[in-house]
Image (cartoon, rainbow, N blue to C red; front, top):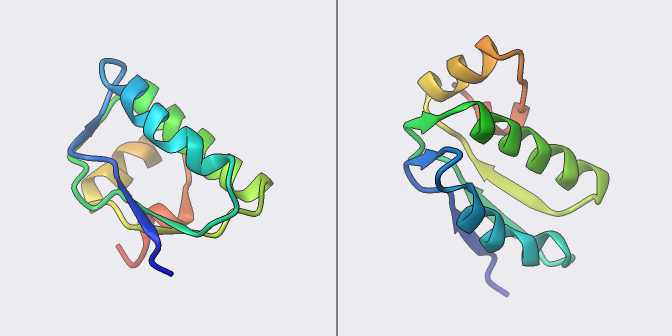
Length: 93
């Protein structure tokens, strides 16, 4: 069985959260493993940061089998400035 990869794209902002949420919503209701690819992210606004944090917390709460492909270190720095910690998003950065 092949895992599904959900690509977060280059930006998560208030302007494009809805399509990203719609893409993820069905996977959050299932128990099949999936991959969240954050490796291309170059821009995250506060709404996007909150979305990522909520996504991470939901995956933990529901014990979902999720693998994160880590984001760029600049995205991790932006999240840290907002006091948002998402360990799998950081990876080995």
